[in-house]
Length: 507
Image (cartoon, one colour):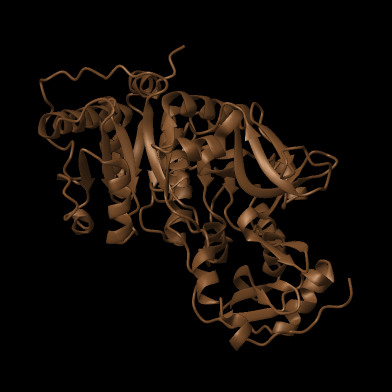
């Protein structure tokens, strides 16, 4: 079986040559034009830098048609795409480059200064592939299904960076799983708003739509008004983004009158999804679904149906079609209904492992099962709820409190613009929840109201004993996930300077 995604990309250039493939701002490329530009980029990389099969090529820039042309040129050579985070500083960029050892860095002029001192040749992202058509033929590289397509340097919101490897075979099987779960992924027109340095951009907003014969509209500089207009003007039917993007579009004055009738696939994740957000998008006739996945599962591994998402907005569905989900105790045995445990996934739609790290690969992917590090519960009907991270459990008096559960409850308060819950030290119970809240502009909220709301919604012992109101946005990754590690460091001394709300009622 030919599992090379190059075969699919070549087939669409033949079969859909005159149809739109990618667009960004004033630039639009048909499939035939995209294929031709990618061939020119490949020839330039091969001639000027000797790039060939298995070589890594780092790409640094905002998601644009130029980025796509470069990446497809890399693939035509059998080389490996290594996206760099355009928001990273010199130290993080240096680490990512040292990790993958690229033959060349393709960088936009605006960002090239961050990688000039790393001892790796640099070429201009904005000019690559723009030359005149060449009479030289490009022999498309023969690749094996196990050959890497991309290495995504990721640490999420915590931890040291890891290089997640996507192979031709793993991507082909993952995209097949997507279509089994949601057939309208095939030939979809996607709006891409995420950095290519994250799964949401690289997979949902680039490789997935193109391999499945669709097209992509890029919005490299986020603006909710522009996003609403692009959905209308380009008849976008596929949008995957973290929750904050949907919140900002729903809060924009243009939202109520916007024509979003084309949008049939809208999924989100990364942060709690409130009933109110589901309701506001539902009023537009759009079923906003909370999908579940991580970089190692090649983005969304399970997506609920629209009907289920509207009734059970806190659920991520019942699992995949081929991907199997298990909720497991620490010893690997399967939890019973409503018992919390680690989410473990097995099936074809998993990444191939970590770049040059066999020990971590064995620990995380061993036995053909992906240990996600996420805590979930499955109800008697099979629906899965994600309630936290193994690193995000607050052990208070020997009882587990899941930060995500508290965050979801607090996010229901209309005065809350952003919420993060962390554990801080506590003399009475060892550790206790602290709620860090940015209040919406013009709104007023008290710590007492937050605590009472939590006690009304959850077991009283789960209510936070510290509530801090911040006058600035919470720190986020380029993928718009909240950086819990930064918050834990900043608020480690909260018990010494904050106001403790007191002992909770007896359990």
